[in-house]
Image 1 (tube, rainbow, N blue to C red):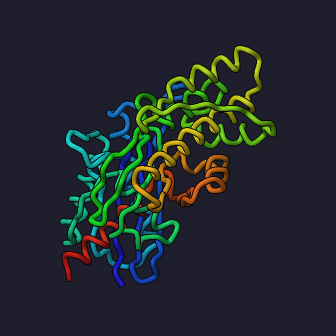
Image 2: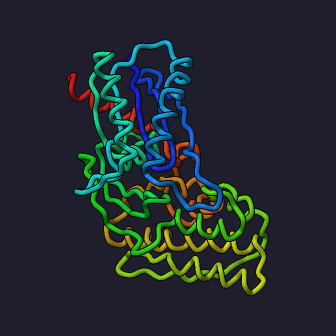
Image 3: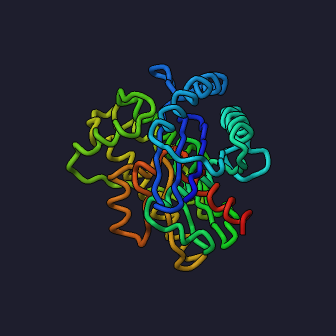
Length: 310
């Protein structure tokens, strides 16, 4: 048996996880970074400060649940696998991983936050077998709205994206209009679930890419015209759903019937996932593995360790 530690210090969450390669199970701890009421995000300097405070506490919590020796460590070092991708918050995780690696005399492997999201999604639905096969994944969050073609060597190619606002940003902006607390996803979903009517949405694509900035203005106009909070919240989520559906259909036409996996914080939304699965042959990560977490990074560490010890 071998146990692998995953560390992810994203822009919104401090995450740690252990993956046991014998039982194929995980232990995960995480904590959201505090965001001041009414604000739409957090400054990187504040994110770095809070990660430094939260990591030792979470690590102690994780070790209290585990008696096994750590075999190797994985850590997310940047948001995405592209040139110039960088956020200071990830340096906290890499620094912590480096120190732990030297203290424990174990290897440290670096990955991207996006790779972690993808593998966490695969792990949550029992599809780690797709690592080594081509598939399409949607990474939909506050910082990313992208469709990615993943090849058999786990290289990622961007094949569709938002041209303006990210889906998670739209959710948060509409949520703040409705009096939700940032991050607004869960609260907006609860408001939307109280609506039992039907809405008509007409998103448009540009060469397979989407535009979501208009959604904020539409929702603002709905409220100004006296529409209920419930209908406005429901409209917001259905607009995002229809946008992603059209993007997926466009990609199927282009790349064939590859497996489609939806991951990222926005994809934990039950309204979107339930409806989308009834319309499209696709898989959604389990909600607890859609949001930022260290499980995918821990699984990637296990894979890298196995490759290094063949």
